[in-house]
Length: 313
Length: 172
Image 1 (cartoon, chains in turn purple, blue):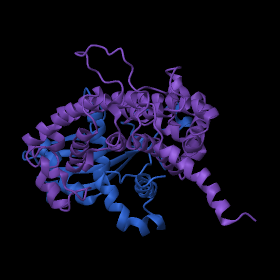
Image 2: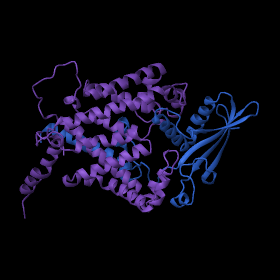
Image 3: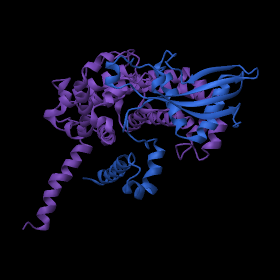
Image 4: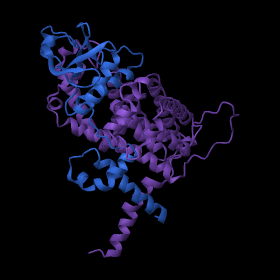
């Protein structure tokens, strides 16, 4: 039998080293930079609609006056820290929403780093807390991505500074910062959690097993405005896509970490989200779900000369 | 692994436990760990569940209401509107989210929906509200000539009368 010292040594060289590599090794910051830019700029555009709808959503002249919220959720709404108090005055709130938008643009363009990102995140939470009745899946996903971006030096790459002359000296290829790696890993794992739960919840529904759920969605006039009646001629195809969607979500956490299957797994996800996003009018949700796929792709996919040690995979 | 990495590892484990257990509020593990993890999740706004289009896809749900004026005239509306009148679709989606949130919470219905409807119609002295749920047509229905996506199809409507409410809030 191996003695305790041998077992400990094996553990140390195996699991502990793997844990250390996974969470703390340096990564190539460029996929993170593209993710940051695409996600934050899209989120800014998404919340531009909210700015234009500010009176309805957040003002005392809207559907949830501050006094009504306070009377019905006196303990700070959904958050133990009542960030919504920042928005008690509607004109201050409207100004802070504009600050949030500018902050997201600043993050997207790489002009501000993680310290300022925390302020953007707190503002984001404040608006979720101010009217928890009107946020939905896109806001929930955005909360996670924004929160995790606060950990990272996401502006180490793809910073838009047109006023600066291009530097001929290449930047260091690795983001040797443990929090950056942790932030990227948490986004990857969170995506797996979202899919796994979503798939398992679907597996509780009869219509998903029967293969009818996709049809029921396509036939919901509140969500879908195009006429997909012609698909009634292909019930088997609809059932196959329905069941494939459920299984893909359940098994995403296993498929995406397998190097051989990863690209097919992600390609299916892109097709699925693009289809749902356009048909069900949830393009931002689709984009927020697809954007972190970039963090699963090897940097060599985009830059053949990338450092092979800088794998975030 | 140095001391800093051990400390970070401990935080990572706690965070992973929080986000793994949070979406399953009925489990014993979530219940047992809620004292520690729920405030943590809530502080970060990460206390959601993940059940998109699950366990069953949404039906087309809306509130249908009659605005009753002092002259006795009645006009029928829906909330949200039957189709998006907005440039940004997300503006419409937020109203659907509001309607769904209110429909699960009778307190919010009285505190938010009824005053909101009255606010939208200053001419109203009361509103009569029905919750309407529309079943989607089946594949066979459509093959037999039913129209898909038709929110006015009376055969698929399941209305529930919720009562008449004087503006702003009190039930008549």
